[in-house]
Amino acid sequence: MKQSPQIDTLLERFYNGETSRDEELLLRQLLSDPAVAASHQADASMFDAIDSFALPPNLKTQILYTIDSLDRNDRVKRLKLRRWFKRAMTSAASIAIVCGIGYGVFSSNDDDILGGMSADEVGRHTELAISLLSRSYKVSYVVDNDLQSSTDNFEADF
Amino acid sequence: MKQLLIICILLCGYLSSIANNFGELCENIPNVNCISINQKMLKLASFPTEASNSNIDLDDVADKLENIEILNCEHKETIPVVKSTVKKYLSKEPRFERTMRMTDGEDTISMYMKELPDNRYEYILVLAESDEITVINLVGSLTPQQLGDCTNF
Image (cartoon, rainbow over all chains, first blue to last red; front, side, top):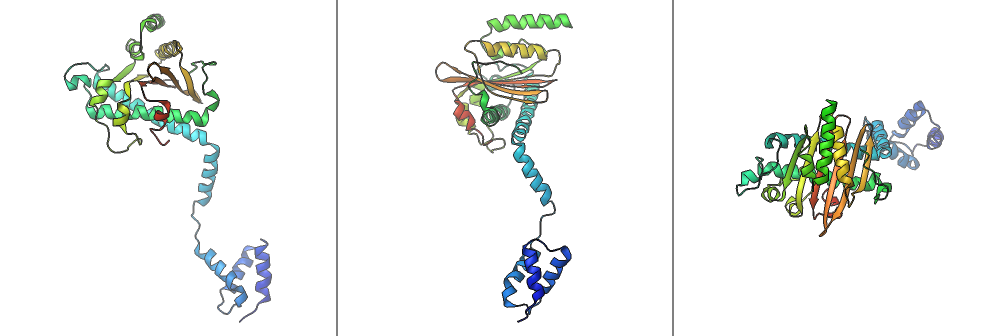
């Protein structure tokens, strides 16, 4: 077994966070020696593990994004909702074109009842409308709790 | 153009006083795309089988719906008329309860609801932007809880 006072000193400095980059490289080199003392095997294994662990190249960006997302949680939910609204508007425009901007006509004929729309289109746009309302209702609990049950101070100020 | 706008506002004001539902108001506003999906249409609708936009069991939900209306207006001079009409409708007794309002710059998203007789509910969603306004109106026995459960948002 090989004992090295230099390893002990460097390890102490390393665990205290006092080593320089060059000292850490030297420490790795010393610990990679197969003849390293048994008392340093655990440290050597740790360095091996560190060496084999590759940090994602965009780790910093991901962390910053996560932190930013936490701070902007409301904003993200708003953007999600806006995206759904945009889809609904597109949907509304397409229905209007198909229908000739009109209402479904009641009759015994299915095509007339659907106002010229296909059953698929009616289903798709119904799904969108319900999704929007559902999301908006959930958002109300996230970003606007103070406005719940606000009949007393109601004001349609959009 | 101003005269036309004034006439529109007066006309909508009159119509809003006699109209019973949201759809009747919508169809009288010029430059507005208005779509109505009624109960008969819903019964015949074919709902998407894959969960593309939500986790809704639409066949189940559709049974609880009476009417869906979508109004969209991109005509700048008509937008104030639409806003005025919607505000009047929201103010009719019993008044709607505002459940949510979000602003993002000039954009505002608002949601309103009120309970109707026989355990029915009416929901209105308004997206007002500087150059566009979209309103969605839904009437049915779908409770707020059931509405919220429709998605995993």
